Length: 424
Image (cartoon, rainbow, N blue to C red):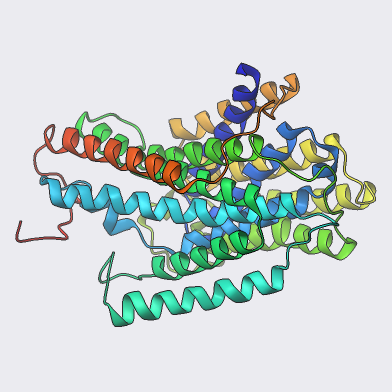
C-alpha cells in the first residue's frame, strides 16, 4: 500500500507546485496550465498504456475543469478569515472550502469522465456541456438574482455559475451511471476544499509569526496539493474500462493547440510580462522588477515549448508512449517554472525562495517518477454512499471550525481583514 501512496504523493507534489506557480498569474488560464501539468503527472504514475494514448485529452479535460473555477473571486473571502470573531473567520474559511470544492468538483469530474469514456460507453460531451451551461445560468439567476445570496459582495458572484454547472454534471454522471467519475469528483471536491481552507489557516499563521516567506503561495500550494492527492486517490481506488477510447486525430490536435499554445498565450498576454514587452501601463507596481530581457526570454521559451510539443506530437504519430508523456510533462512544467521566475524579476536580480522550491519539487517529482511505483490499489474503494459522504463532509467542516477557533485566539487585529457581518 505504501508504494501506491507514493504515487499519490507524486501527483500531489506536482499539483501543489503548479498551483503555487499559478498564484503569480491567477484567473482561469493560470489554473488551466497548472491543472494540465497535474493531469500529465497522473497519467505518468498510472502506467496505463491506453491512458498514454489519450494523455492530451486527459490533460485538456483537467485544464478546462479545474480552470473553470478560476472565474470565482476569492480575494475578499481570504480577508474574512483574518477577522477576530468566530462568525466572520468561520465564514471566511468555510467559503474557501466551498470555492476550493467547486474547483475540485469540476476538475475531478472532467478527468474522471475522460478516463471512463470507452468504446462501449462514450461520454456525450455535447449533452453534458449543454446541461452544465443551463445549470450554471439557472443557479446564478435563482441564487444571486432572485434569492440574493451573495458570497463576495461587491465582487463577482461567479461561484453560483460553477455551483450550478457542477450540480448538473453530477446529475449527468448519476443518471448515466459514471460511478467512478462521480467518486473522483467527490474526492477532488473534498480535498481541494479542505486544502483551500487549511491553506488560509497556514497563511494567516505564517503572517502572525512574521515568517519571511510568500504565505499566499503557501495557500495556493495547499489547495493544489490536497486537491491533487484526493483526485489521485479517487482515480486509483476506482474501476475503469480495461481499454480506453482512442482519441481521433483532430481531438489530439485540438487538445495540443489548447494546452501548448492557447493557454500559455493567454497566461503571457494577461501577465506583467506582456505589459513590459508592449510598453502598456502596468497595474502591478512590482512590474518595475521585470526587464525587457525577461519578457522576451519568457516569450521565446514559451514559443519554443509549443514548437517542441508539436514536434513530439508529429514524430510520435499520435501513438504516445511513456517517453512522450514524460517529455511533454517536463516541457510543460519547466516552462511554467521559468516564466514564474521571469514575472517576479529574475533578470533584474530578484530571486524568491519559493521559486527555488518549485525547482526542488520538480526534481523530486522526476526522481520519484523514475522509480515507477504502482498506483492502483488492489482493492477498489467505497461505492457511492450518501451517509458515508456526509460523514466525510461533516468531518472536514468540524476540522475547519477547529482551525478557526485556533486562529481567533492567536492574533489581534490584522491588516487585510474583512468583515462580512460588521455588527458582530
